[in-house]
Image 1 (cartoon, helix red, strand yellow):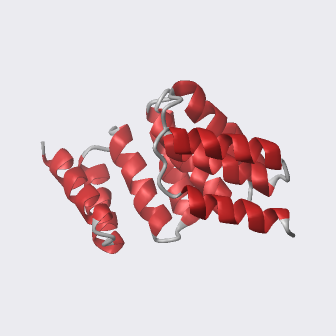
Image 2 (cartoon, rainbow, N blue to C red; image 1 turned 180 degrees about the vertical axis):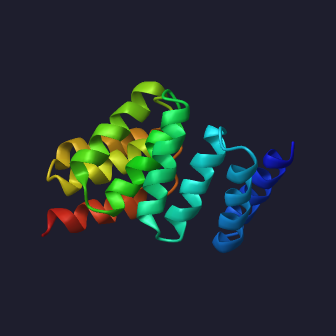
Length: 152
């Protein structure tokens, strides 16, 4: 259907780092199918990439309300909370993402950052190792952020 086409377009723009275009496509997908939890999640991701964290949060929460067992939405919401330096909220939703689907590498990586923000560095290191074990490719970046937080 048309909403799925806009979702695919938005995802393609995301992968090309064309986030304004991605946002427009994901907004259109949500307008066409306001009950699509995937469309709301993708809209939230587009907002996140554009630094519009309040909009990202509300979109992710809408996805979760539509499908309470949608692990990717919890993982995306956790990234919002990490970006806002809200480790407790991040740890809560990322733990739920992992409970629902323990194979989401980015959830483990963001949980590592949340633990580090909370000063729980051993837990941060363990979560980062799980992320890397699941194929997470930005482990060095996360490790550097953890090291920076340790030295503060």
